Image (tube, rainbow, N blue to C red; front, side, top):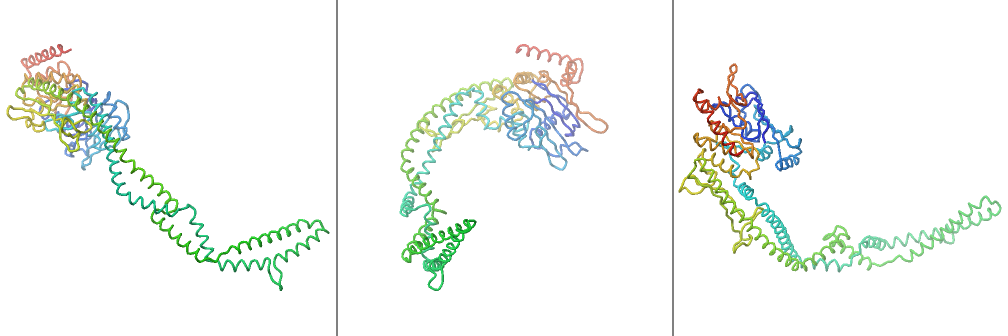
Length: 576
């Protein structure tokens, strides 16, 4: 609920700090004193539209800050929303501020940190419902009617059963549709996939063959050079000819001489062994080089085969690559896809059977939910009609319209297919007939401001247990009603305030007498400036204010104020 409201330089309010109690909070004062300005300031901090014209003359900015106390499930919901935005602070409390600057900008803050007016509005919708003559009331929003009716019906179990069945149904339906799309796409691709499998398998690929082929191609293309170079190397190493000695001959002589030296001088043994090892190494190299030379092939036909094979591999990589390993992976994947095509029929049949079963479950759950709503709709209509009569709207009637829409792909229910959603197939809308013969119309089309206010009050009272918004604000709900009905309105508001914090601006003393907290709004002139001052009234001050609301303060009006106070006291005692 709203605990504090601080206003600075807003319209004719220079500086005002207000503290609000729970229960019924009444604001009274002369016309133009600033009562509605307080509500405008509250609307601004709740994310409403503001204009620089609200800034008090002579100031460069106006500020409004509100502190709310959060309780129960509402605290969890609001704090979860704040947590997602990184704005959560003290558990159980929330502060929101709005600064309006002369240049046209406005700055929104939540818990002391910058935010957006849209986020303020989203959070404010959880906290306060302002019912003014020109406000867009929450009860006029058709999308909320279904939720309100469900809370009035206390059909949590039916909603839970529907939600579970609906989620299972939608999940299965999406799986079936996805599988059908895959099957259609796969069937169109089957011929292509078979061709690709045949093409890749016919190539009999090996992951590392490409490099091997390149090396072989290089050797075949350079066979003459390889033979010539190896022959020259052999000549230098072992076959120098009659006119010169080869490296192996020279090294053999050197090894022989070093062996003789080592026999005389043992210190040369290591050197002799190293030269002998070098000779052995050259002899082994000569052997290997002769084997290599004998393997050099002059085979143009094989070279052509290798070129053809490399071109084939290049083509496969261009289609399915970029590497041969990618081509082999593609082969594995398309084989798996072809296997899936063979299993589609069986999988589709299983999903279709499951979907039929879930449709039956959903129809049963939806029927139970719809029946609970129909019963609640009758009870709510009766309750609101009773309240309307008490509010002197004897000819007005309220109705909850439950309808459904047909859809070609909807849920089969009683021989027809209905469009469904997360909340069932019912479309819920509140309708009202204010005068006989006019017919029932949507709430938003009720033209009279006084009728709208009383209708909203009747609805709020009937929906009090279901409405989770903690603070309800009524701006001059007494418009167009007299003193006798004012007592009824006051009693209704007081009852409503047992479950909500209710704030009301009124000119009726009969209504004001029910206040748990009575705030008097007064316009004063200090120097040459007009300003608004708010005071909390107690005991005799309240009697004086009630008398003033009745007429010029005198013995008669004071007596009337006391009589009204006694009547209200007795009404409250009956309830308590």
